[in-house]
Each structure stands twice: as structure tokens, then as C-alpha cells.
Image (cartoon, rainbow, N blue to C red; front, side):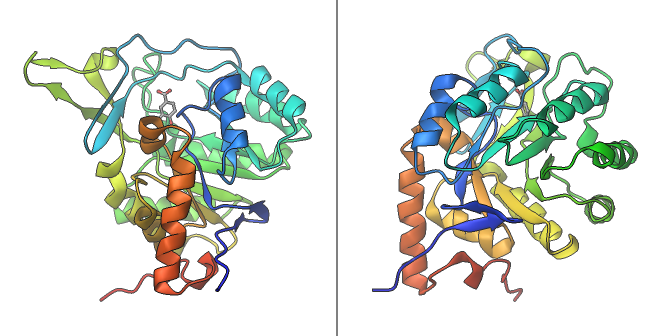
Length: 314
Ligand code: DHB
């Protein structure tokens, strides 16, 4: 019987499985991160961290329904020192992606400088798209501020010399895809993660006639099954417009093995699971892996390289 290999490489970072957790979900504490380390996920991604620990926004701040989730967490995390210390103590056998999300550009430089001198980090996933900060009232999220991103990346690569990926918000217009690709193609970016939650959704409780979330007047980031067409579109647009050495990590709407297949067919080299991981817990990684392998068997593929990016247009 043909052996099926679901390993992958993110610009040289080797993953034994192309399935990993999405930043933000069950990856904040020692217990949660340890559980991911022991699971069949191909890598571990941390909750986006800041310089000092944060409690995040007031509750209720997360809600899920049959096809999606809405969150306004507000970056609850234990602070970068905790995550660097965890990494140094545990010396993981799988790649460790430190997600960072400074509240300002200055804080991002501080976080990146700290990560730069940490010997065990495989890569930073720089979050350009946290949609839920009550502190940032009149500020556009960095992911939508193209001028700022260019200057920011130019400054980062003056001193930072490890692999760096960026987690992008969803884009909708061709003009924005082209503009972002033009910027990213000028820098030694290791990967892009497409996509973060769709910002500023609103879910309503019909009976109570209220929002379901408390912070930010009920508005929050939308994730889960309902956002998959947007993840696929963003993966595809960037797959065709980014330099071929920039890997794409797909994120958004992974619930079944079939979703992983679609992300990879559109051009992703690996995928992240958020809402479904929260719903199902750590077993999700084994289930998805088995379902994905079954699909490859049915289709007679033995590795992801055989179909990655090979979406046909009818
Ligand atoms: C949070 C939400 C996000 O979508 C994100 O990218 C980072 C942080 C949050 O609210 O904690």
C-alpha cells in the first residue's frame, strides 16, 4: 500500500504534519501549550503576545453558533517572557511559532528584538490584524495601513535576522491584494498566514434583543466555517502574486479533512485550525489528519506537493 505523507515545509521549516493550531485558540497557558506539544499537530503557535501580560476584554467576549464564531478577546496573554521561557524550558521537538501583536509599532519593535535573541524560536508570526483592541479607537489595524506596513517591514529587516511571517487580515479588493503583494515581495518574508478573523462582525441574540458580546458594542472578529470562502480567496490571490519562496499558511474555516485539501489546492503549504479546535479540543488534530489522509488515498495522492496550488479554473 502506498505511504501517504502529509509533512510539509514552510520555507525550510519542516513540519511532520501540515496541520497546526491557529494563534489565539487554546494556546495561551502552560497547560494549553503543553497539550499542543504532545498532540499530532505539526507545529505550535502561541497566543499573540505583548510585552506585559494582559487580562483582555470584559466577558462575554466569545460566542459560537453552528457555522461560525465571534470574538472580542482583547489579547489576553501571559506576556512575551512567559512564552520565551516556556520555549527554553520545553525545547519542543516540533516547530514553535511565536505570535506577537504589539499595541503599537514601538511595542512590536521591542517584541521582535526580544525574539531575535531567543535561540530556540523557529519563526515569528507577526500579527498585523488584531481587530479587537478597545485601546485603539481611531486607529486602522496595521494590516490595512499599507504605507505603515512598508516602513515597518523595512525597519524590522534592518535588525531582525530570523524567519518572520505575517498574519494578514482578509482583503476583498484586487487593488488591495496587488498592493500588499507588491510590498511583501520586497522583503525576505518567510510566510504569510491568510486569514485572520473578519473584523467587525455583529451577532445578535433575537430573544434578548441584545448583542452576544459585551466589548466594543458587540462587534468582533468572525471565524469558523462561514469564513472559508474568504480564506480560500486570500490564499489563492497571494499564491499567484507572491514570490514562490514565500510559503502560505491557510487559516479560516477548517472543520474537515476536505477543507484542508481545498486550502492546499489553492496554494497553502500548511493550515491552522482555530474555531474548530476550540469546539472540539485537542482530538481535532488526529481527526483532521485521518480525514485528510483518507481524501488523499481516494484521490491517489501520496504527498501534498502533488496538488499544492494546482487549482484549475473551469
Ligand atoms: C485577538 C483577536 C485576533 O483576531 C487577533 O488576531 C489577535 C488577538 C484578540 O482579541 O485577542
